[in-house]
Image (cartoon, rainbow, N blue to C red; front, side, top):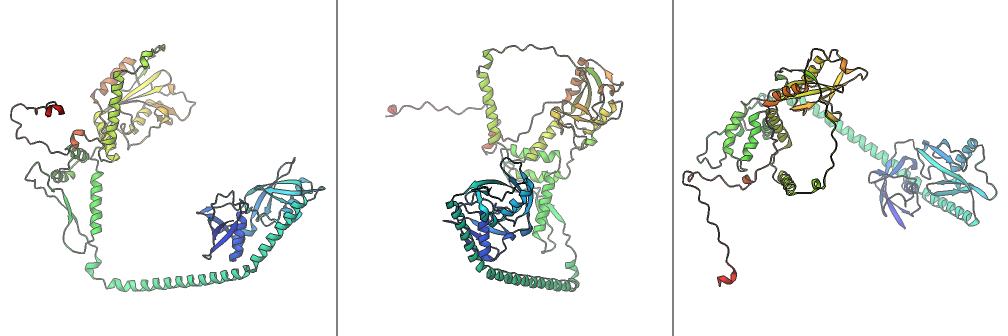
Length: 569
């Protein structure tokens, strides 16, 4: 026979023998009776997970020799109420609330008034039976003995099925024997229940007394320290009472190394002025880390180029440069904010979009799906680039890569063209500087509308465009040219009637020429991926320039084809 171990609140372990059909409610009841605790005041948990007391041990998912823990319940206990739904054959299901300490017999008596039928009466050899969680409770004696709490119903909503069945003499004898065995077992446990309960009450009073004494000692100790604190504050010397204001000094060893191709430890050093020996090392280290973090987050062009230059120099760290760069770090200028970029001439125009002729889908030939040599070469190149991205990536953070790409986009995409569809046939176009804030796009849209109506701007797939001064056209992925959709809050308004008549009308070709002229200053954007070049990974120092002025480079002699072994003999 299997067993489970129940950890009781009195730090005792109670072993309860179980069978596959034993309810977990019976396990809790036996543990409470053995250790002198109230049954309705606790529930069982396994690995901090509350178990269902209505389940038998076979369906609970607990392993053999499992360990359960009794936890104090915060509910109403014996006064708890549960909603019972009774299902009678060929009748409508009825619901009613009952106290969990009521028996199944009294529950059937209460439902008899609702169904208009005496559910407790037997019809010949057919006796009333109740079914709950695949367990059957039959006969008047068992229904009067079993309560809702004893079968695991402590709260919530539960369904009980009712039916009249015929019981044989063997089944009646088995029910009577089972009830007698349960009564005898419970009586044996109750013989020691009063003694255990008294021991628990004495222990609880002793713990409460010790806890109150401990809290009183803590309170007296706190009052004593508070009384001594004013006296000690007057005896502190003036030099110690004043805060230490030791300035943080950065020493830069700017002397160049003797060997220009060598590597010397001439990096900037951080130290504190040796005024007093009582300075805290931890505070100095915190100030050093704060200064390093501030320098890394400074949005300056020179600061962002430092890591790239270091990694590009054969993968080595030239410490001789750090002294000069540390001196130039404080004099660098930050990237101008988006709001500081002056506006440009919008050159706002309105034109009819070009009507594309209907293209007849031509049937693709079989040669289109054949893989050729050019396709294989392009695919091989793509795979090579993917492997290079994964295996030769530099040790730089993603924030640095995104900042580098943002600066490169601002440098490449200086101008931006925005087009907004109006209705089904027309478009409006305007020019912007890529560094301008996105809020100026909203200002321009308000200027071309004849009335002040609420609206919003969206990209494809209904992605909203924020009306903010903190982001520019590059940050919102609008550069170098984008089509933005205007959405009015009031869908009943016709957008064609809101467009101002002051807009210059032109043809589609003229609008394309204006856009091309404005975007002509832009260059090609090359993203920064942070990949170390294969030639810089060998770790060798650059070759000396002593023989740079000599004659043409003579390649090394090629090795002859190795002779066969039989010829060497």
